[in-house]
Amino acid sequence: MRIDLQPWGETMTELVAAARAAEAAGAGVVWAPELHRSAFVTAAALAAGTTGIGVGTGIALAFARSAMLTALAAADLDELAEGRFRLGLGTGVARLNQDWHGVPFERPVERLRDTVAIVRAVLAGGDPITHRGVRSIRMRGWRRPYPPVRDHIPIYLAGVGPAMVALAGEVADGWIAHELCPPATLRGLVLPDRSSFDVVAAACCSVDQDERTARRRAANVVGFYASVRTYAGTFKDFPEVCDKATNAIKNGQAADSLGHLIPDEMVDAFTIAGTPRQCAEKIKTYDGLANAVKLSPPSYGLPPDEVREAQHRLLELVGSLR
Image (cartoon, rainbow, N blue to C red; front, side, top):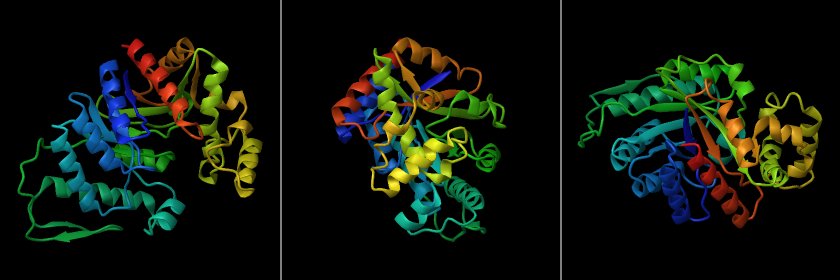
């Protein structure tokens, strides 16, 4: 099973250094998320700063850009990475699309299906390029004058519900799980054959010689998502905790500082947190269920020096798993 990493850095320079460390530790892919940074700009920095590790957007928002711009960015990044790029796309939630980016969110499954079709059509070239759907394109007289690095750029879709997972199996090359995706969640999904489809599980991985410290660092990550109604189904066994997190947000608490509301059993259920040996054992539980597990250090609500220490511990763990 491949071990991937979602690196952290307070600066882009530090982020690239973390990617290099991940490459040296034997990680398979470094993934660039999109929340506080642009996924494509981050991926470009990671591609330019590494030599052999895979580089992916994990994930880029599918609807905040035109599908053509997404395709052009993917082609440019694959050239920059010399054929190491993977395009990871996700829908985000309704509020993020509508309120933050001013773009529609209606019929997200069909919209994402159209996005993938348009991206593939643009990457394939040809004239005209047309697609009609929830998202459409109609182009004549345009050709990209630069030779592609390879014929096919892998596309990954992120998703939580069965409809998005099914769409990934239908139109994509891989699927990226939510940041809180324990093995039990994977067992409950119908996923394509992993011999031809890349299943990427994901987990916040908090490593420390003191397991209480490790849990405390990871708790804010769980608390953040517990406060979001979209993920209520994920936490169906902890409804009272979710209510407390939601009320805390309404009362003005920061979304990334709700870890004090999260019991240890909830941290253990949704993250990999503990000593190096405990974390290594938990990572093994994904074997046979996924092709890869994407690990990220805890960062929500933590000061930079503590995130830095957590990432250092995580990189040490990744190196020990080679």
